[in-house]
Length: 193
Image (tube, rainbow, N blue to C red):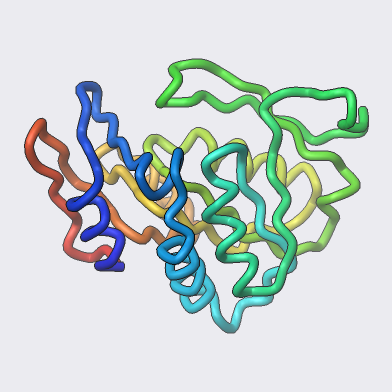
């Protein structure tokens, strides 16, 4: 998706430690028109697949997942990073490591929202080493549901998570794949959408 690459180049900022700040459109302030364009692209990529639900992780993945789900007319279920009093005790859970926050989270999805036999598309804002997506895939497996594929807004290809998932036979569609980041430049994989 050339529009994502252009948006990153125009509005993204690179910080030390391979951190890409895209707060102006993706994970602090939301560019809703652009996100709906991303949602349409995801829906087009998975056109013809039966998708029963989209699963994501809070917080930044929700906007991308919502945009895709609105176009595909399916519900979004998002894994919560904290147990709250309104969350039932009958839960699926997995431990994920956040690259951005450099900490582990246990994420939870209530069993009432994810069922055996459902076909699930996993969606997130970033894919680096793949911890969040692997954790969500684990939860989908616990529910005896099926992962149809994954869609991410931005993949940091140089960190290998997407390639590792693809090597396992999982379909991963990224709106932009970054192969290298320097203090002054972002270099995209030529195969990105």
